[in-house]
Length: 281
Image: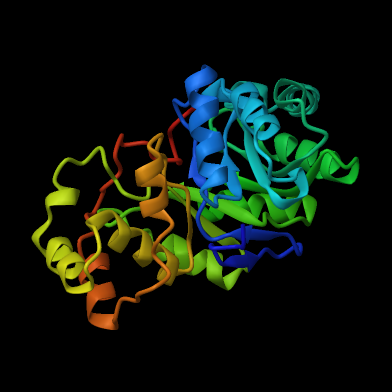
């Protein structure tokens, strides 16, 4: 199948599709079938995590798929409880064993856990794992600018990606500006903000969707794309999977982009997970 999703280039040269598949809660045989369905539908970026307990499911989907491994970009993430250097190295290896992979294309620190104070150690483990060929590109999730500044100060190595909560009710304008100024790509988790029941009933979003003969979800994902963010919507439905990557035949004008960005709230986080204080284990 020809590429149907455009790609961007990270600061270390790795390319990523601008939309990937989120896999949180996709487990077991049913999960593997859903992930295989997404790959067959044109997805080439698959996002998982050690704490999702589904790296094995992702690996099974890859083995079932007819798409060669070197055409896919697979992500996983280091959990908070294993940020000390030796534990981080072992966990990266365990992530590979679980998925039966020789390497991850992208490996991220899942949360900074600043109270624990080990995220620089964890970052050094990712740096070394990349040198050893276990990871092609390294990044972070949910890191505030001060956390990233500390990584660069202590190691001299900048993340390629910061995966953050980003949706119309939490547009992360300041964080995105920091990423752009520092050549770090923004990834969006929970890009549709589905847990906020009213986002898919918003009148402004509905009008924009009707104008373009698209769904509200497609409009939101197009907004992410035009912001320059890589979104990773989760869906187990083949119909929804196809819908989510069918956003490259229309565009939003400045007014429409502004209306969507203007939906942001002072603290629109879905679960009030502030990286300055939140601890993930």
